[in-house]
Length: 79
Image (spheres, rainbow, N blue to C red):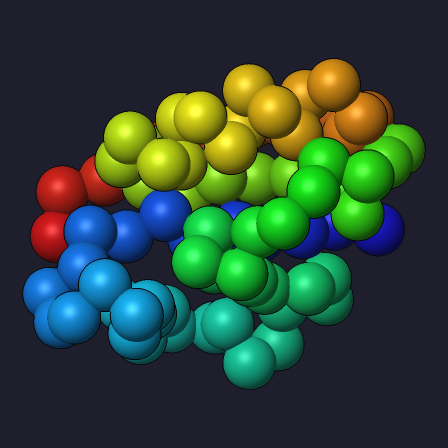
């Protein structure tokens, strides 16, 4: 199972996650979530995770996920 986890800087109030329009996301075979919804690394046990964005919360969460996930990779982008 592949997860794409978005870590995007908020442009709105912190209670509303900023989710960019990503071309092709509608055909992505895995699950797409936002760091706003992250609660526990156990959700990602033995999963492959790709973190898109590297805000402070994204880095913290990627480190936390690594304790359970099979693999955590990521990229920092400028929008």
